[in-house]
Length: 293
Ligand SMILES: [Zn+2]
Ligand SMILES: [Zn+2]
Image (spheres, rainbow, N blue to C red):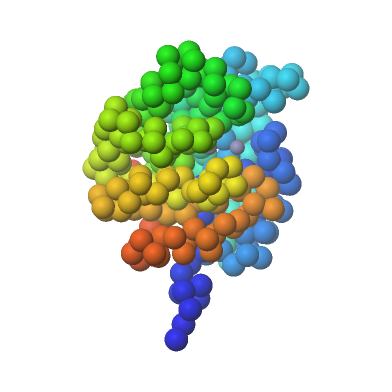
């Protein structure tokens, strides 16, 4: 009998952040890609963060170090050239997609469209890391501030899922990144998710994902930062029920997080009855929606 690890492909639909192109990641991109090859991956999407629209949209660490948005935008162009070159260099060893992960804040949709035109990525990961202009996954203090400015925690979740809905409708990203990241610093997230206003939005967004036939990032980094993967178990069960394509993303930020938590995550999915046959992301070049714009 073959064991599950022999029959289930190792893939990552979201990850490959590297210290070369991202201040909060480690190693250079080639080292990260070599780590994926060494770990036996079949295909990976390299999905570096998009650059900030302006200096006001920088991550706190970028602002503290005085790196301008213009410098980050230039770095992003270099990321694309480098990733495309590595995609070719390692073509016989690993299928690589050159992609990027979005931000979501006022003005981001038009900016993402511009970046798509300029860089021609294979696909994008649609993510929300900000609510009301405040980064919600940076630290508990900023998270608490975002909740306060939203009114309360319940409204923070609602605002997050509303921003996600708009982004999904506007951009139709091939992959939806860490669906319920908003629970990151909420220790009672299972209760918060159950609030009527919140759960109605979770279901509504999942229904749109199903309708648009987007891939849900089964984000393994959740095990490092919180108790479990994104999306959390109740959301995951609902997504499976809706027939949404679920694909692992290690959300690696350097060599040490390549493939981290893979076996743990896959065991969980298999327990839930998932067949663990991974769909590859729809490519923008094959996508009528993105061709027109
Ligand atoms: Zn990151
Ligand atoms: Zn992210």
